[in-house]
Image (cartoon, rainbow, N blue to C red; front, side, top):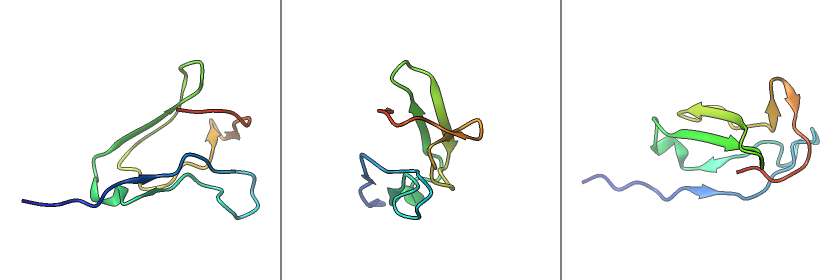
Length: 72
């Protein structure tokens, strides 16, 4: 039996380039190397997807920062 650490997912971050909370980190995600992480806009558009989540999301979509809002 293998016991994994619980994922800790923060519910907010501020990708404004000030060096504080600029990326969306998921603590312990490295225990799930095949994790499929997707982020959607409030209109259902996928704005981020990663298999493995080796690089935290920085709030960009197609190279440009997304506007402040709620993403799922």
